[in-house]
Length: 230
Image (tube, rainbow, N blue to C red; front, side, top):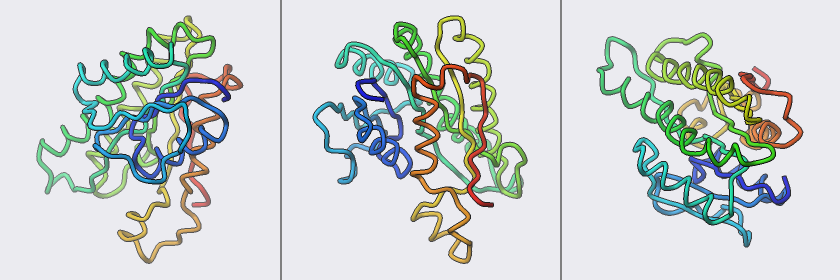
């Protein structure tokens, strides 16, 4: 990963921060993009990093401006890691259209907007990569997972379609499908769960960075489950 320019959306969150730290440790040049205005204190402290806070990636123009700012700063872009997204547990009976629309915006539209803007830059890379974050829950949705699972299923289809669209240009597009991620928020929400069976952010980060690497040239259109020890 040394010297590769990697843009990470949702970079200020638990998973985004883990990916950023791992990529920095491997010598990548980073652009950290997030809706939040201020990054957490544990983001990687390296000289070659661009931090873009307060970016609404559901807005096509804002997403395009952020991606172009990355390419302008570093002279190109090698990988886009679409980690930005959201979750909501809600039954169909209790939910309204707003919940379904919000999940679509946060999970599908953010990835579509950034990917559209990044495509031209990635085509100019010797090893262009897009990695999306889907969800294992979208393969078989359980109670209360309708809006979230439907939106993540959209991410899966976007991944497969975009892989076909870009493969002739040498750009690969893949998605990881995690189960429950071991985050402080999830531990609070599910205090009786077996945390040891969940996926650690660093474990998922390792898979994401492999797919973003030059070594993963033979993988595209893949939906890769990362389900820990469940």
